[in-house]
Image 1: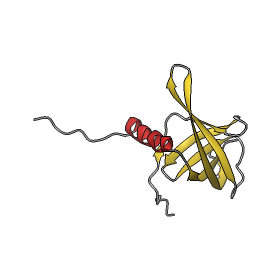
Image 2: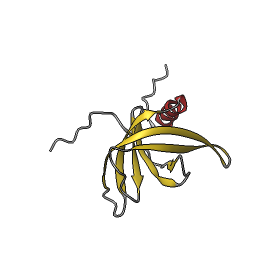
Image 3: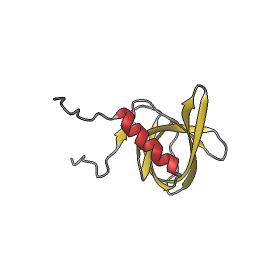
Length: 119
């Protein structure tokens, strides 16, 4: 079976909570990210072919959060290997520059780069 991914994704060992921007209620956790999309892990399946107004609350200081609002379309949703959890793939339609900064910060923090040998 072919399992190679076409888009490079970066798994996150710690999940950022995702909220409904309109109601400010939590809807799940960020599973992976790319500049054009994200995967949401939730306790309920998401409706597909629907635009969602999402909010990421990124910690910036002790007890303080910065909101990153974005609009994304849910392309697919299916049950996770973990019982009572669902994975849903979203295509990002509108996102502020802060979303790209978040992706770059996550890449820097969670990625390993080869070190140059000192002479």
